[in-house]
Image 1 (cartoon, one colour):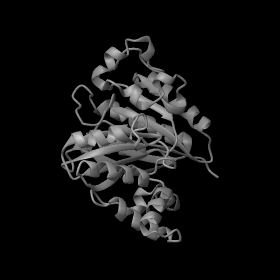
Image 2 (cartoon, one colour):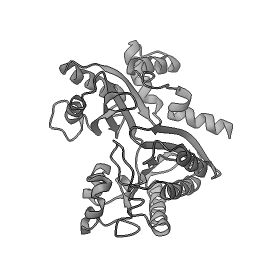
Image 3 (tube, helix red, strand yellow):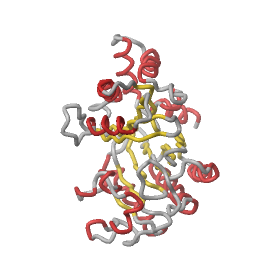
Length: 328
């Protein structure tokens, strides 16, 4: 099987269409790369690009995109509700087919060194590309956000892995690393009270002492002006352990305790097909339903088309890959 590496860089820009098009053009300019999806949020002032292809080409496209972001995004004036420390806030590399996590890490280290050396951006490695436990998880690195980064980098414990030892105030820093598939899953509530979303997030996240805590789950609450609703924003670090269905059901029970209902959900980026199969079988109460029946039932049950359109051919990872592979 040919090696396929996925890259999901998150940029601290969700408003300026010209900047986002320049980033997209940089990615598309590299042969051997498929730009699978662009997820833009004006309120979060953040855009997530998803692309995949041959590992060497993916790393080249990632570098080109980070370079454009450094030229076009000035963190000294950037504001948004999503936590961030840099113009290219985080750039994960995910081995999809035909390659190991160690091989993905090798590519991540090469990318990190090049970004640090050539673009003079401080680079923090994370997840499977970081051996120091105090700076392995993204929330650890991002604590204090851009505004606290300059002081944070003065500490010996928070020197960048690559690039300058002092903060680059224009670009901020970039987090790069090899990791497993992550599902970014946001659930909207029929309230604009962020305190409710905060409470649900505090009950459900993996490091909570609550009986409702789910393993391998990160969560925060925020007000999403794009929808004029409070949301609980989840990162599912292992979708087989804490699946979208399990997260949805737990969130629904907790919301009910506050007299709140779930309106719908959204996936930022792409989602593995298995997540929808599980939710669809549950909704249909039928383990023998066809794949397409499961997918449609999951979309309806999780409200994946309530906040914005959900096209299975574009949002399901395996289908998006197949479409681009067949086209190419």
